[in-house]
Length: 260
Image 1 (cartoon, one colour):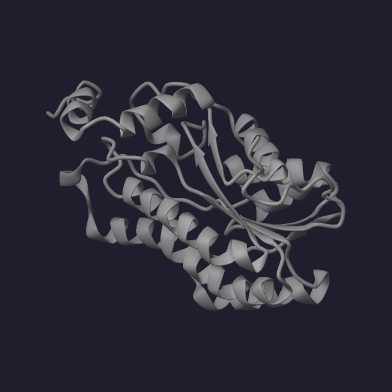
Image 2: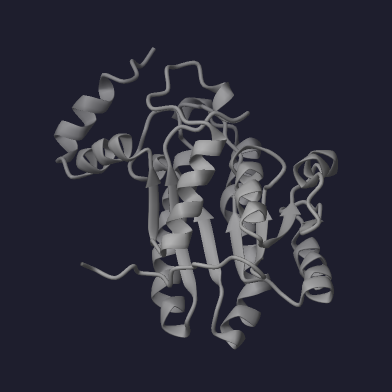
């Protein structure tokens, strides 16, 4: 039996978890798992009222609203965490932007915002937190990518490439940081019912709730998995599709969406 690629976490009591994009969807649901497990949880997003709802009646929840696109806000926010909690043991990047669009629909301004939200903000976060984690020689980083990053899927002309980049980044981070004692988690959900997927006008196979997604993520992190992908039957089909020659893959994908 192969050992997990990351160190399993059996006891979350005393762990400090920073969730970026915790006001709704997967991030908010993940917060409930972390709080129930006894962790101290820092909840960050732009929308303070929604963060307050997530944190209701939880003494170990710290609300820290800020815009992930504000590079300076990362440093000031982390400074507040260090002052109150002494640091962070796990950061999970949940913030995302998405618009269903074909290649001819892409707008440069909205594309730049999606790129910066989904990918650029991750680099801002890494630059903020990595020096302390590396110096300590412990801690973890979770990147929520997507099965949309496995291959070029229709309607994901900007979103898909950002998630493919996050998959690549997670692999790089693992190679760099695992020898230094850090855990890295690559999280690839299928379709999850959120305000982002509500924009889709097509049937989403194996659609899961944020609670189901958060449960899979939490169990995967606790078990020390590197890639956490779900729902398993759906993601396995996509992984098999990845292995096909382009000619076969393109032919199958063409049946999913007809070009107008």
